[in-house]
Image (cartoon, rainbow, N blue to C red):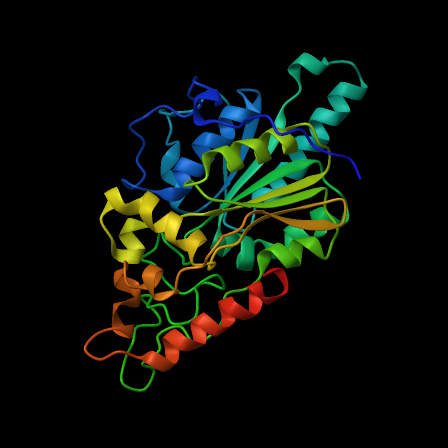
Length: 310
């Protein structure tokens, strides 16, 4: 198996040049923005981002942009077809030698979990089948965030959203488990998949550095704490991202050449309630009375996932 180089071992080794200027229109404390910021440092400025309608629509609003690279705004279901069109156009120009390799661009799709799991999944599946050469960055804030935080296929069991509040006849809130986007991609044998967290900048940067030099479909699913939708103080973003990893709720792993490896594994997992109790979207599990059965079910799901690895 090919061994991919580990580029960074310390925070101070990461790129110092910023790829995203400060002062964007996104919410303070957005975990997805921090993940994208770190990733773009590795990819450089020769990128074209195809952005699905969603929270990150506010990142680059004409005529202002915080990016050095190019930005193409699409419908929620359209970023991957747009990426296919741009990639095909570049490849044709390169084959005709009307463009040189110095003019080539990396094509990056940026989409939320709603587009990634639901509305854009069909087009993405087709692109995976064609082995499209692109990078896909999913900022996973576990709901349709830009329209009021409604249920998505990524919303976890027991969470409260605008369309699945905890009410008398549905006290749990969201009653379905989160869709496994990692394994949906893995089934189509892409080049590379990784889960990343803004609280693990070295791990994240190393993974982007690896993926940059590969060819084919490459995906990043970024744990994206959302102060607005999840209900917490923006200053606690890094704490909540850390708890998601330390409780085992969000596994940090990568898929390459047919193998899945956990790149960050909790030495001793914390109880899931340490993560749940930090956010308003789970407050109904603790007040006015503790819903121990729901908390235990969430814990059992996490335990079942980790059982083969511990």
